[in-house]
Image 1: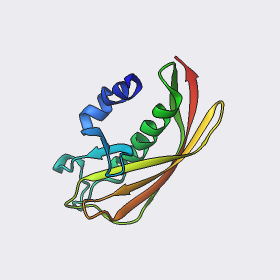
Image 2: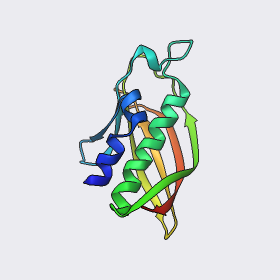
Image 3: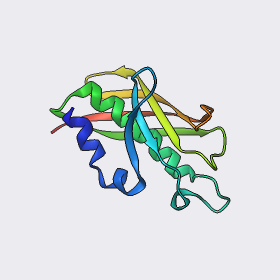
Length: 130
């Protein structure tokens, strides 16, 4: 799907190392390999990096829903951090709660390699014509 290819080619995604993945049920989301460059002072993955995974997972769900003739941009994002992430990669999967004519709202769960939920988030995207 071309719209997901566009996401994958994003400079930010490439710089941080975010990749599109699928879970055991075939649901698409994002994967981020942990690295020293993504950690804050205390050794945990930085909260801003986790927030970026939430935003990226929502982008995957939104772009699957809107098709190739539209763009969508984030207009609101909220993250609750539940557990620190030290020695684990991250996986994030989003569900759209509402897909309206102009706004799409969804929720996200972020997991570590033990399948613990380390963060939850929600966000809203606005549609714009491409």
